[in-house]
Amino acid sequence: MTETTARKPSVWKAFAQPSARTMFMFGFSSGLPFLLVAGTLSYWLKQHGVVLKEITVIASAGLLYAFKPLWAPFLDHWRAPGFAWLGRRRGWLLLAQTGIVIGLIGMAMLTPAHLAPFIAATLMVAFFGATQDIAVDAWRIEIAPSEQQGALIATYSLGYRIALMVAGAFALILADHVPWRLVYFAMAATMLLPIAANLRAAEPDVVVRNAPTWSEAMRNAFVDPFADFFRRYGKVLALVTLAFLLLFKIPEQATIGGIMGPFYRDMGFSQTQIGAVTKIYGIWIGIAGAFLGGAMVIRWGAWRPLCAMILMCGCCNLLYLVLIAFPGNLWALTAVISAENLTLGMLGPPTVAFLSALVNREHTATQYALLSSLVNLPGKLLGIFAGGIAMSVGYGAYFVITVFALIPATILLVWLWPRYRDIGKQPAG
Image (tube, rainbow, N blue to C red):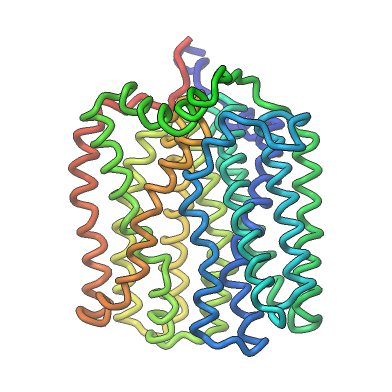
């Protein structure tokens, strides 16, 4: 065996590490509340007679996830009140998990019959769900070196997607047989599993310097994380990197918003077909893609798989033209969803591994929350205008436009290639 071969990281060992199993439970914990304050919630509100205009407003509670950089510094520089005994990361995580459980129980007890306090409980679940994501991301980055991040991201994705099925398909089926309030009680009970995993998990061995004065503490928490990014990478590289983060996922995000449901319906597919192919079959294809993406990160680092999957994933949007050519064809829908979800799943681990490698572990929670929010920001904006664009130019032209959006990201990718090609790779020796 050559020295080069001996240095290759073991994919099996990476997936078998205890932190990878813990990340499965943390992924489940993160995925569960996401739908319960958005898509699944809308069915409960609809059944209770809430008008559509109010449904969309209430179900937009998930937008709190986009603002998590605002309070992420607290998770970096202070311990969770009442939970300090568990450590900085796991303490905040347990506080967030407890808040989610209390919020879900509150939603179940209040029901939409008491709309104002019900909305308050919904916002509580969304806030603590976003806080949980901050804590989980920080724990993941600090618990393992960069070459093992691919496995952690893949197992997190598995847990997350299973939680989406539980909070989505399973909750809807259960609601056909029992009242919605019992469904939400059941969802709150499932949170006990990730809470148990948190209590058994290890605390990352990262020392964070505590500021001696209040002014210095505030500066360290809210100013230095942003200044540190520019200090470490320089103004030019930092700005180009941030621009790249804003642009490279536009094609992907253009097909995950509210436009896709109407598109599938206009192509002649029934709701049963759409649900079975996109929400059940597609999720498992995405899980397979996430594990492939995780293995790619373990073998080749973050940057090379990221660049390859950006191009492949973006170009997959052209496959939607097949559905326009063959409307109502279930085999065509299955093939398109297979390619889309596989590449989306494979894009996830390199993306998260790349963002994780960019952060300074003195500001893990703050910097990762900021970078991940930048990546998802264009999708929030596209969701507002996508329908109008598609109505103006047609579905086919819309999907072609999303692929052309790859051009500026590709130009930046070429410039960034020599600067990041070794980021997140297994260290030599």
